Length: 106
Image 1: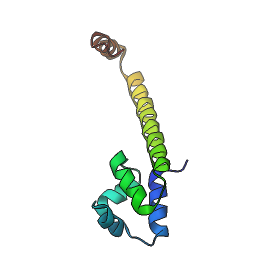
Image 2 (image 1 turned 60 degrees about the vertical axis):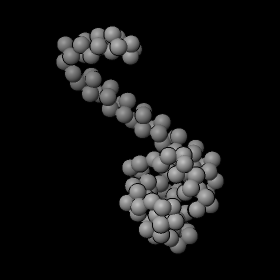
Image 3 (image 1 turned 180 degrees about the horizontal axis):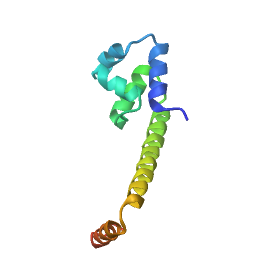
């Protein structure tokens, strides 16, 4: 799967820019750019638009990848929560389920 950060990094490098150069062009920090490129954060739509403009990447391509990664992260988090829930003693499982039911979360 093509990752958003990889696409941004590759386009930045194609243009001969360092992270600091891109950060200056976008009025962001180089640390922020680095975190995008390694996949730690997914930028907002507004920031994606600015990135797409500067790097000449189609905006719809970036937004598609952004949505895909957000969905993947939710599924991954859900799987981790399922594992942790299964590891709980039965007493705590019941209490959590009752609480969720009372709060109309289920």
